[in-house]
Length: 116
Image (cartoon, rainbow, N blue to C red; front, side):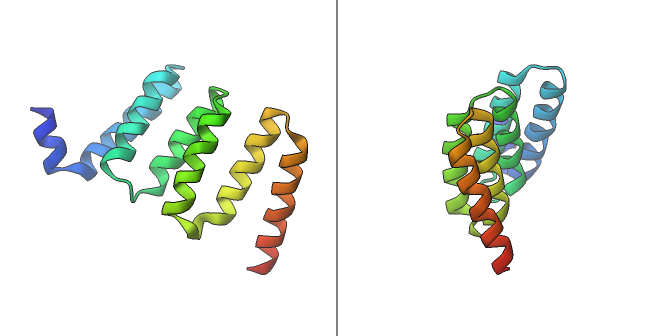
């Protein structure tokens, strides 16, 4: 029954999935939250915020490599979000302890912001 509703109302389903993900994250049920965010992304790939929610959760879980691969996908879908994505990549490298790459990304971010 829920599958039929999902197909008929994908936006409502992705909103519900995203809200449930926030709830799970607030309860420290990160694996459940990630699954909800992935469901939201699969139903509505045009919603940037779904990806942001997924990225934040992956970062809290220290799943940096997985978060970087999601950012690669997001950068293809949302090229206008380049500035925010550069910041997220730099932050992930910093969290990973790869300070050289983090600095490179922060410098690139500074150049991109200066060009805007």
